[in-house]
Length: 167
Image (tube, rainbow, N blue to C red; front, side):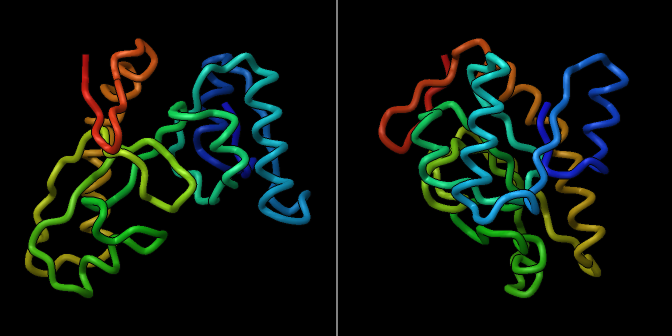
């Protein structure tokens, strides 16, 4: 398990489960390319065959993606391609949508753009604010992401152009 923050909850959970952890602080690097290269080196040194991003609010460089083609997945709190980026839930509320959701996708060189693996809709309720809506989205993220990760690890996801087929 690798994080850019030592205070991330996943660090504690991994440690409690005897999962090796590594911290790669963003502040130790002059730019995104250097940070991404260090992360890629650490991933390769661990022997990992793929990368599962969760709560990792950093944009990795194209060189990172090139080192792990179709081997990096991410979860995002919107129905992409709507509302990419760090403020997806706020953007959905500002646009007055009645449905948003969760997207799990392969990472490519662009932000929140890669081939979509699966999506789950989440209704926007009257009176929702960022916190309440994001809480309901997280419930769906926690439900769907483990199933996608399992399929990813088992090699059951096949990318054909921009489409992903489950085997």
